[in-house]
Length: 243
Image (cartoon, rainbow, N blue to C red; front, side, top):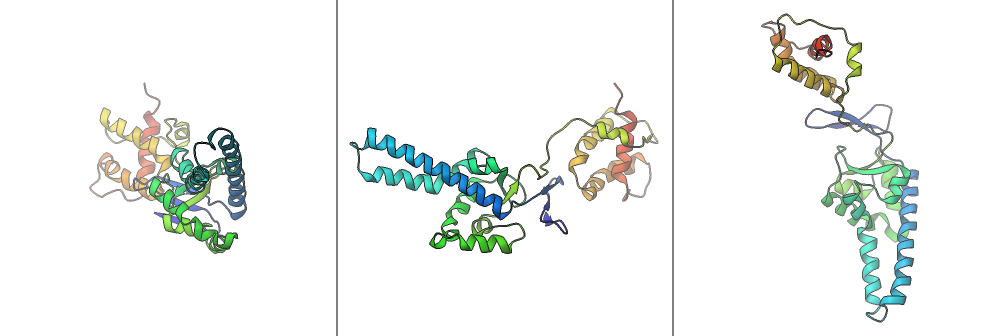
């Protein structure tokens, strides 16, 4: 599930597992700078290849080898970096950008190929007018290739992608709660695993996951529907320092 944050161009995304994070779509200016840097690198590669070709390879083939190389570089430059460098071409890396799928997951080979296949539409008559109009009219600054492939270009230093962490220093700020009965080893491990995962979960999803165990620990026939996550975190705080 993905949706825009009010009064902002950021997007709050949630994985099927309930992990919630925020994406910040890259603006037109930064994407243009990244494209200009990539164009410079592509031109540099063509110059180097031309020199090497004229010195070493010109006698082994005609101009078709150079044209074939130019075609491959022009059409698969971005696809190569999307697939093998996690959505970051040299220009995007320098500008702190990354191509991802619209839900924030890593870009796939198929999506990257479609995205760059549609680039000829963006660059109609060489002015990139269609890409500019599409990005300007879209809240997420998506060009036609992004719409067709279901992709998004984001800022890597602002977007909050979930990362694995076993540190739970923040748990000390919770108020300890003593359970109404003695916990088994398996229950303690389950609660600690929930506490480690909690910072990556949306509030609603965290309560949904915590509800069954919280209800059983409260020994109440009524299901816990509010504050279930906070209840388990309080219990985790009460024994997290045990050895």
